[in-house]
Length: 223
Image (cartoon, rainbow, N blue to C red; front, side, top):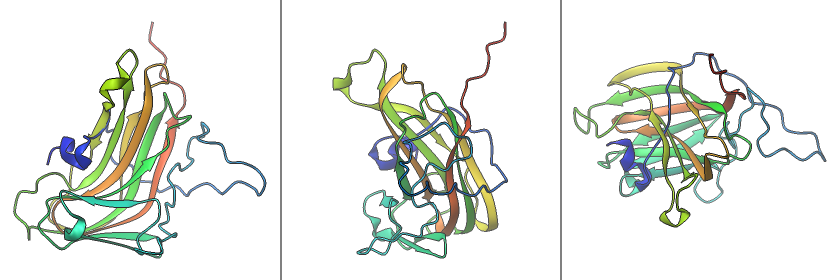
């Protein structure tokens, strides 16, 4: 599957700078009575909701703020969460399944950000030797470019995914995607989705997902 197939919307980003190897803890919650800023420019802060997969939906038992989607129906994939780890398991023929979160971008415009996750994998060729797409992280950023007619709707501004994982066992390791969110004067109506995709047989485990600012200011232009 090309990224453009994902969620029928298309997917993601300007630049993958390679997997990061460090896991950073999330920031503490704000003190009682003090409102939390929408998205302050604070490198290292985690902008994802429920990153520990601790809050579960009462009806489905799946982690709140995260959603499962698939190529046609979600019956080919099972999602569960326990002790800070989310598990995505393939049990049917649908060619891709995604665990995703839509993230507010207010205050993140013009920033270089990183989406990273600890991943463990047990991958098989049960559903074919050549998967429809890569099993890895994905990012999609959609919006309206400055000067474009908003009546034509949003377009893919950033589409990115990792290099993919082969059949076999992989112990816990950190994977990441880095990309730039356009400045406020470049785009409007931004919509950011970060995902973990499974396209092979087997299952993936995820822990400590994080979306953080790496740099507030763009690089200086050399004279």
